[in-house]
Image 1: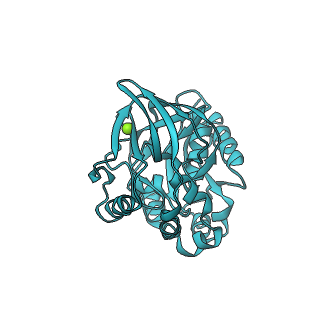
Image 2: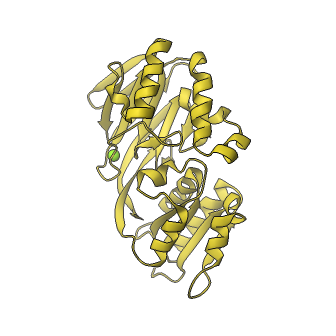
Length: 292
Ligand SMILES: [Mg+2]
């Protein structure tokens, strides 16, 4: 199929009425094709329809949840798939940050000017659901779920940091069993991160060297530890940007990973809650191209 529909903007309704939405409507040189979506399912469907209709490019306009849903929609069609572009306009924008895309207005300008170029993008798939950014289990997922909407609207990514600090003293470890090539791990963890890109929680570099083109998922294991050690780890991650400095933290890379949660623990997939006790996670090597 050849790009009948050209460039399609799939826009989260949270964004459509704001300044980024207004900037989208000021399209130089003709109207943009804009699909405003009120739910992740609608975003996914819009992306699939754009791809199936021959779009050459699908632009995700929103936060990490919007990017994830667009990618899920694009993966539903056979190759050749449209290029992915991202205009970061959510709360955390961790996926966009990891790709070097920060300011939505600058990204729009560069997109318009043809100043962004396509690069390969890996995607992790967990029980059939894709993760472009980071899947987190345990404390970080609990923090994300507990962060109030009003606080996110007011503070952006800082809301997660403040929420995290308030919850440092009440972390709930969970037992987990991990299997992958060369790894058998069983223990009590505070957090597991499975990353395709480096950032989670509104700008924390939880998987500092995660490379979204190497065909591997990054695994970071934060085992149960004393509150003082956890505070030090929080500081390392926030200030130095590398949790691997902490001697108890483990970092590995795999093409696939099985996670058995022996205790219930909250799961967060690119910013959205996710359910499951047995997770089967695979790295897909370069199924998409993303403009950056
Ligand atoms: Mg990788």
